[in-house]
Image (cartoon, rainbow, N blue to C red; front, side):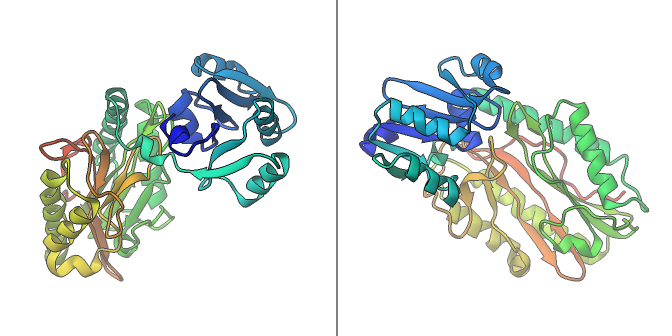
Length: 344
C-alpha cells in the first residue's frame, strides 16, 4: 500500500494481467483489483469466479455480468473513493475515457507498479529456475533434431513441443528460429525457409512455468562453420561471458550495456539491441540493461538476461543469451546449456 500512501490516494486500481496475478494470485484474465487500506476486491466474470475464489483467497470476489469496467466503476463508487491510482501505461484511451465518464467525481491518478516486481522472492526464483530447466532440456533435444532440409518453423515447433512435454504451460514468447541470412534479423520469427548446410541457426525461446518465464538463445552451425563465422561467434561468446561476473548488486544497466559493447570491439557496430532485460511474469520487464536504462543500481535477486548479438546483413547473425540471477558476487546463470560452438 506504499503507493497509496505516497500519492495520498484512497485506493489503487490494478488492471494489468501480470500485476493482478502478482498482487492477488489470480491467474486468469478479464479481472481488476481494487485495493484500499481496508479492503481488497477482485472483479471478474462468471467464467472465473470459482477460480478466483481458490487462487485469490485474501480478496473479496465480485462477479460482473454487464461489463468489467462498468462493475469496477460501480464498486469504486460504492466504496466512496475520491482519489484512485490507475495503471496509465496499461489502460487504453477508450477505457480511460469510459472511466472518467463513469466516475465524474473521482480523481484518477496515474501510477506504475512494474518496479514492485523487479526483485524476486525465493518462490519466484524457484519457478523461473524450473522454466529455465525446461528450456535447457528443449535445447538438448533440438540438437538431435536439426538437420539440413528442415524448415525454420519445424525447428520452432519441435522446441515448443519439447517444452510442453516437460511441463511448460506455453511458449514464453513467439519462438525465434532464424537461419543463414535471416540470422541478421534479431527478432526473425520462424518461416518456411529451409535450413542448409554451412549456415548458422539462431534459436531464441523460453518456457512458462506457473506463470513465470525463461529466456535463452543459442546459435549453432549446421555443417562446418567458416573462419568468419567462428570469429564472430567467439566475439559474442567472449562479450556474453565477460559481462556475467559484472551482473551484481550496485552496478547500473547502462554500465553493463557499455561494457558488453566494449568487449565486442570491431563487431560492436553490428550489435543492434540492448544487452538485456528483466524476466518474470513478463518476458520483458524492468530492469533494462541498455544505453537508456533507468536502473542505476541492480539489486540482489533481480533476474535479467545477458544477450549480446552481432547481426551482419546479407550474411548471418549470432546471439547467445542466458537468464541470470543477480547476486552480490556476480551473475548466476539459471539457463545452463553449453555455449561452445556446436557444428551439427
